[in-house]
Structures are given as structure tokens and as C-alpha cells.
Length: 249
Image (cartoon, rainbow, N blue to C red):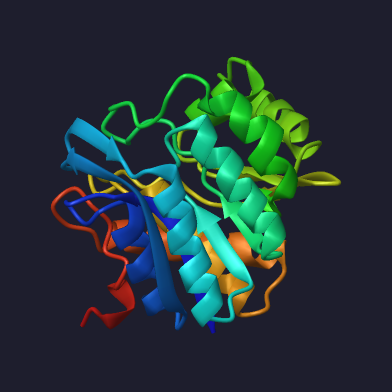
């Protein structure tokens, strides 16, 4: 089983491509990866972003799809509207089942996108995805809403769910995830008090992608990914998750 991550490179190893690759491998999925941007960052701050040329990102995707049989993919940081539109075209061309992690800022607060990215995500990428996984901040940006309660998060999930199935992650609310596909569903969880959360959104969306590649439906994939990510946080060190927690003694 193989899956593809299309995302940025975080040299700290906690988020982005490296988090996705570690998650795929730990769940028995052979990882392939397309790098959309290089970042200078650590678990505390982002000091710079160098996006990869959109045409070269497209070429990376073409070469991977030429050489591997891939059905499931996820996106992380895409940075620009131009890149979003290109990825959306290739998702359709290759009939990929896509999970969109709509990365706008790093967990440390640094900006990882251009201003027109939100509209491009809504207009081009979400309509061709099978799921998007915004946190509260990202859900606010995508809906134009202010989310201060679980009821607000339900409304946002419903609003985005008209475009594609949506799970609003609960780390900033009561700890449970709110999933909308035709109707609202709650994925029960708990808030884990930890500093080792850098890359949690990347890990979560990658785990969903991996479980989908194993043949699970969306709801079960979300539930298992939530459990997996919480365990990765519990085993984390240095401010980041440990995606390889299953190998810990």
C-alpha cells in the first residue's frame, strides 16, 4: 500500500513532509512525497519560506504517478493560489482520493501562505477532496466565522461540509472532533496537556490518509487517526510528536 504527501519541508522534523512520511511508515504505508516549499523553522518559530516553483511541483507529481500506483494522497502547505489550482487539476487527472490539511500558519504562529490561498482552497481544491481537516483557526479563515464554542465549530463544519466532508479538529475546543458528511458526527476525545504538539495537524491528516489507504471508511479513519495522534503527542519530545511511538519500548 502506498500514499502520497504533497507538502512543505520542516527541518525540525516535527511537521510537514517528514511528519507525514513517519506517519505513513508507522502505519504500514509506503510513503511518497512531493515538496512544495522549504522552510527555515523550528518548534518555536518560522524564519523563512522558499516555495518551490509550481511547474516543478507538478513535475514531481507526474513522475511519482508515472512510477507508482497511488490512490490516496494528502496535501499540507501549498503556499500559493497558483499551486493550489495546479494540484487540484492533477488530483482530478490522476483520480486521487485526497485529504486536505489546509495549512495557513505554523503551530508556532508563523505565516505559511499567501493572502489569496484561502479562496483558492475553497474554489479549487476542497471541491475535489474527500475530506478537509481544519483546526479552529483554519476553519475560521475558510468560513469567515468566529469560532468560540463547540456550536460555532459545528456550524463551521456544516458550512464547509457543503463543499466537501469536513472534520474540525477539537484540540482548541473540548477535545472532540466534529465531522460533517451529510450530517454531524462527533469523534470523542480529550485534550492532552503537552508542549509536544508541533506537527499534530500534519500527523492527524497523514494518519487519516494512511487508514483510508488500508481500506477503512472516512469515519473510522478519523477515529483511529485521532487515537494515533494522541498517542504520538503522549510519546513526544523536544516540542514535537513521536510518530513512531508504536516502536517505543
